[in-house]
Length: 335
View 1 (cartoon, rainbow, N blue to C red):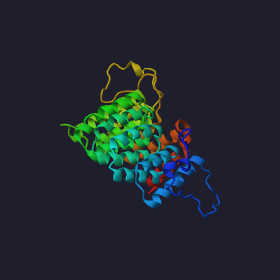
View 2: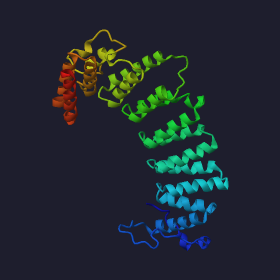
View 3: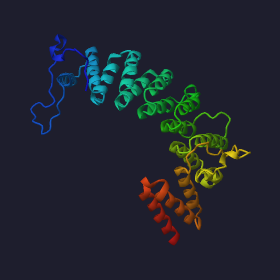
């Protein structure tokens, strides 16, 4: 917990003399007391005092800010601060500017982002938030709360102007870091889960576009698990059989041949692994095994052979899970 340097305790401030502070452990002898700093105990004692009286005033905003800066996860301070802002009809644009600072300082604290949601729900001005979120992501490109807030903003207001550039935004984030799983998830959210504006494209065209998009990224970095997960997501969402990707996946599931880069004709529908790619790719072998398992019959034995190669050679860290898949598949054959 941190506090403002050289700030006097509330107990030493004349303007707080009328408030009776309430200690946390009043008339209690806890078995395992938490040892707070003097500054934090002082502020929270006065906070309990004003909550008891129900005071909502400008000095309450000062007090709650002090507590939040020492402990940004203090949800009661956040809740009471919001109620006070509403009671005072305080200018929320000023509060949002304060949140600009606190959200970046405490990126991983849920309460900061929840408070911001409440404010924007009141202001009904989501437009500037996208720029703020983009700047925040420069501090941590994979921060869950930041991405979650962006998706809430888009879905809650569901405005064409907000959605208009989201695919480009996701593309830019992936260009910055091809392995940013949060950016991949956001693209899936934009395209498939939230009524994204796809113009005149029909469902089949969107699926084809996204398949081409993710295949290209897989070819650039075959061992990027996020892209393979996105590929599976497209197929599952569109109920497309995995077997339709057999031609694309197979070259990634085997060792690289010496003449792999001497192909005269490139299949644009199925881009090959990039030069220097480390093959075979674990995700491709797993994908191929799933294709054979879904085919059933004799193909299940092909699936078990692939899982065995993963367990014994290519992905030994998950040996137990691969062996489980083998046993499960063989039981299905026996039945």
